[in-house]
Length: 253
Image (cartoon, rainbow, N blue to C red; front, side):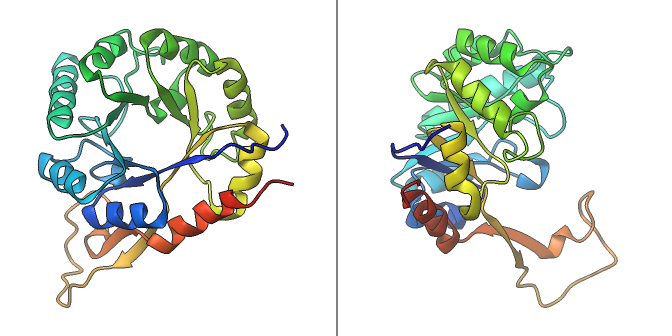
């Protein structure tokens, strides 16, 4: 594809108030707020939503995911998602982010109910999309369900690997839905990626590992399923967001 000259919106994924503030200062136009990014993101707590919303002026979209693992949810989990959407709405979120699939890897028919619950908030279908059996059929299903945008890496582990599929999805969307790539997009590749695919929005994590300030440590105990995480934290660095935004400000050749 040829160069993309319109402004590109950058959404940054965060899991703390500090990361949210850093991302906004760095130039992010929208934030996705999650809990437990180690699990790929789950619904953040009410306290985190409320405090993050109060600290920001940019749009805040809240992850609605009742647990880690797959995206095939039973009736109780679906009801939890509905209640969490209502909570995010009450706490001032501008949008919600969710994904729900059936056992065959199709977009779950209950997606429409979640969209209806969320309105008038914006609705993003997250990378559960990449687990679908047929991405192009799933894109049509999301359009039919009223989804505003879909976050995708083109069915691959990174958007760079899936860039051809992403470009095809953008063409198939024909403006019916925003195709927002996420996964592996960095300052050094974002300009060429945008020019190739024709996307209008970018999703990025931009997380850096930070050491714990704890002086006393007990190496014999692991509180979670992944050993060593107790003394490691991740945060968004303002300057890295600024560099990504700056890379997109450079005109394409």
